[in-house]
Amino acid sequence: MSIAIDRNKCVGCGKCRTVCPGSLIKLDDSGRAFIKYPRDCWGCTSCIKECPAYAIRFYLGADIGGAGSLVHTEKTDGILKWIIEKPDGSVSQIDIDPKESNKY
Image (tube, helix red, strand yellow):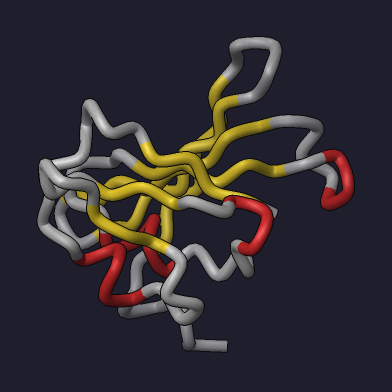
């Protein structure tokens, strides 16, 4: 499992670095995030959920049924949107209300 960080979108807030349980995310000289060893990523997605610039995407490999899809999150009006970009160009979205996520 792995993440990809788009340095052009990164705003340098450091939130991803703070929440990474493996301390894998670093900041370069310009203050932008990068991951030196993507293969070491645990796949927890904590960084994706914290990134305010949507600069981090999670790679869904074929081993977990993603066949190369990329996932990122966006927050709108208190709803966490998981956006899945498939290799064929199609996009799916799953909306989660954090207030309801532990209901069941």
